[in-house]
Amino acid sequence: MNISQILSQRVAQVPASMTLVIAAKGKAMKAEGIDVCSFSAGEPDFPTPQHIVEAAKQALDEGKTRYGPAAGELQLREAIAQKLQTDNQLDVSPQQIQVTNGGKQAIYNAIAALVNPGDEVIIPAPYWVSYPEIVKLAEGVPVILPTSAEAQYKITPEQLKGAITERTKLFVLNSPSNPTGMVYSPEEIRALAQVVLDHDLLVLSDEIYEKLLYDGAEHLSIGAVSPELGDRTITCSGFAKAYSMTGWRLGYLAAPLPLIQATSTLQSHSTSNVCTFAQFGAIAALTDPKSRDCIEQMRQAFDKRRQYMYDRLSQLPGTSVVKPTGAFYMYVNISKLGIPSYEFCERLLEEYHVAAIPGIAFGTDDCLRLSYATDLASVEKGLDRLETFVRAISG
Image (cartoon, rainbow, N blue to C red; front, side, top):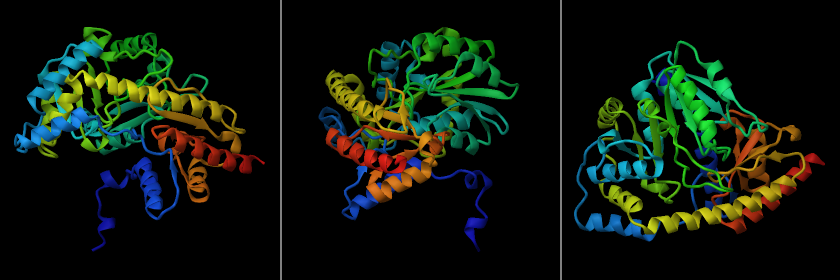
């Protein structure tokens, strides 16, 4: 029997995550002794803050190694609810929180619990690589809305309004954005919120990069615009980016109670509870005042790298870049070089040992994503190699 010929249509139509594939290839080359400069992974290069690690160690010492509730430890859900009330002005209770195995599972659970076959989900492009694939796995229809560098890779209320049909169920909003680093201003969020209300939509707001802001950018959670918006918003986030806890696999979603009950049921039949002792590390991340200083130290380091990378890329021939105000990515337009993004990144890795993610993974084949979540020395060396490659192509 050829198993590959009898896989479900559901999984056969979904490719592997290109970001993970290229990151893995870069790591394999490093394991072979090759000096690879990686701009590929969306993973902070800082260690998890020590007070978070110590809290998890203490939980282990105290025997917190048993199964827990599928929705998450109550103490953690209380801490998340308090954080959302204080930082995001979201009126949620602990019962409206589900803890998940990473931010990706939060998004997967929400879409799986909401989307029926044929339902349309509006996704602005460039988009995080997994949004449309998760919609497809739920047998929904991703409706991709293109944006431009001139518009700072943001959709307008008019674009959103024009994409809505009788089959539209959900609008996916990601600010700060992966892959562009763009941040919607509070005024822009309010304008999009009005369209959501006028057309009776649901909105999934992915806010995992909310703590990483620059140049005075301000984050507004769309669910905080009004009580009516709060009743139709699913807020997804996690601990990976701001707290450098990528391998801990801790995320969460906040939503109206009936949806949380549905996603908790779904998770009870898939992964069950999140690692119990890891959740006590997350409690420390949210409740220990030392976390604020740790986040700010990382943010300042990211900002320094952002400034340096932007200055270098702005002088690179045949390319253009919009300066990001959030996250830790630079989205570089390479259309004038005349090479498709995957071929560009493949050659860059093979010939110059620099790992970057092709824009085709994010819905735009004329760009590439560079992550500056790596040390400044590696940023400098990687950009030297990239510049050599680009100048060789452009003549």
